Image (cartoon, rainbow, N blue to C red; front, side):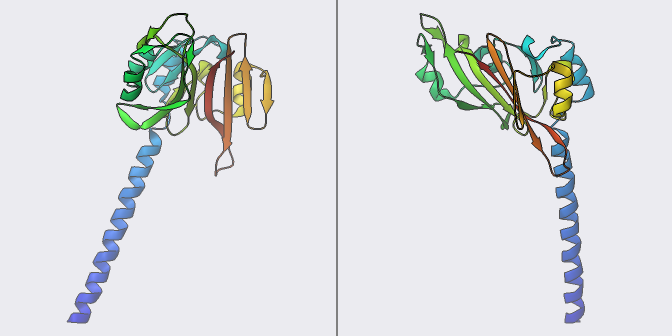
Length: 207
């Protein structure tokens, strides 16, 4: 009898493990599905942007932005500067540039972008009115990104070149587009499948 119960116990344990693995697999697939904008989101976003990468339009997790972008623009979609920085820069000093900082989204703490703030004026400004001097977005922490002509995290280096033309610079896994005001760097990564797709995009105000 004890032997029988032991065998039953082993089968029950195996059954529980199988169920747990299946649930984990479904959750993992579900999380992966949130990494990319839907076709509807892409179509709507593209309709609100210019055709060229230097036009300065981009879609980030639910909203289309147009360079130059302020702290207030980002805050509308939950990208909030840390409270300590709010207190430190209640009045943002004139001619000041911060160090790079990670900014979480209040609606989803797993979403992160990297920013540098700048006040180019001769007088102090309210933090909300300060500009983003450098903005960087990565594949897994800025889940849904759309660039002009429908370029997304799924886009390859060749597709980006076809959409925006030859870059000002090309180095290994990155393309750099620039004009007299902005420098935009698009980086690529080769995944386990062997396909090389966009992994990071950053906007930097030139000196």
